[in-house]
Amino acid sequence: MAKDIFDIMMNPIRLRIVQAFTSNKEMTANEICRIISDVPRTTLYRHINILIEANVLTIVEENKIRGSVERTLALNVDELNNHNTMQNPSQQIFRFLMNTYAKFETYFNKENCLQGNNKIFLNTTIMMMNDQEFDQFLSELQALLIKYHLNAEDGRKPRDISIISAPPVVDENE
Image (cartoon, rainbow, N blue to C red):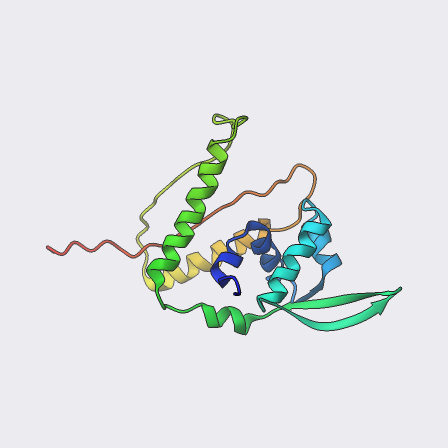
């Protein structure tokens, strides 16, 4: 039985691979390895194959190079859009939150957890915006996230940032 697309996409390495395609329409596995250089090549290849099997990535071209085959890959946007539905949204949100909780649980249960030096924070902010201002905010946020999401260079390490826009709380008595 095929793994659920949401379970597949919750893996941080696979999520980084998919995010790499936001800046590049097509890439080879070697190009992905250069962008996500802090993850071992064999690990990246395994996760790339999982994404291909799940039809999240598609092979657009194959070239024979010195006895091996180099595949050019692209994000299968249609497949992702097929799963981006409002069917059972509360279950999708629950899975997202439980995945985030599991990361905290794993981290804080480590023997060598540096609780005072981990740069972990939680924040909830209510912002007053009309729809146009909110669209502008999301556009600016997307640009900021893209600016920092790739390029594993010296001193850089992955930081898992989750952002949730929750529905407004409406007082039924008003």
